[in-house]
Image 1 (cartoon, rainbow, N blue to C red):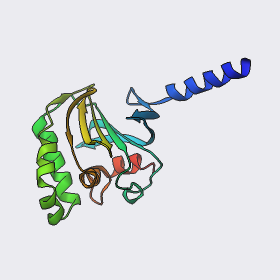
Image 2 (cartoon, rainbow, N blue to C red; image 1 turned 90 degrees about the horizontal axis):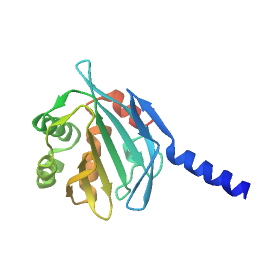
Image 3 (cartoon, one colour; image 1 turned 90 degrees about the vertical axis):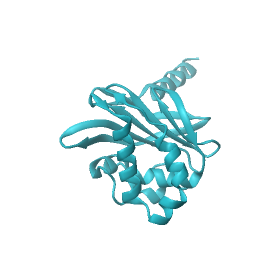
Image 4 (cartoon, rainbow, N blue to C red; image 1 turned 180 degrees about the vertical axis):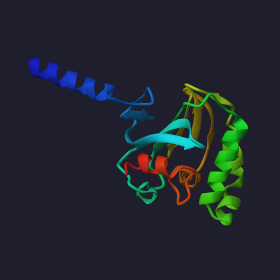
Length: 183
C-alpha cells in the first residue's frame, strides 16, 4: 500500500511540475486530444527592448532544429503576453513578416488561403492573456485565446509553414528560437 501511495504521489509531482519565467508558470507537460506533449523549450519574445510574450514549444519528442519536427507530429506553441497590448493588426503584420521571411514565393502562393484564414483569427491581446496554437494531425492547426478556440486551419503542410515563423532560418527573434529549441 505504501509503495502504491508513493507511486501515486510521484505521478502528481510530474503533472504539477512547472517552470517560472517572468512570473508566469510554464507547465512541463500538456495533452492535446490524447497526445502527450513535453515542453521542448521556452523563452521571451522581445522587440525593441520590450518583452512581448513568453513563447513555449511543446512536442511529442525533443527537437533541436525545425527538421526534427516531422509533418504529421502534434505540437503546440503557447504565447503568454507580457506587453500591455498588442493589436490584432500588429499580430497579423508579424505573422506575415514571418511567413514572408521563411517561405518561398511558391509556398506563400500555395498556402495563401490558409494564411488568410489563419490571420483572420487574431484580435487584440493584453498583458496576462494567452494565445495557443495547436497542431493536431486529426484536426489541423487551431488558435485559441485564453483556452477558447477561435478557429482551425486544416492541413499538415500549413502547420510546417507556420512553425517556420518561430523556428525557420529567419525567425523574428533568434534568442526565442534558440530557447524554444533548447539551445
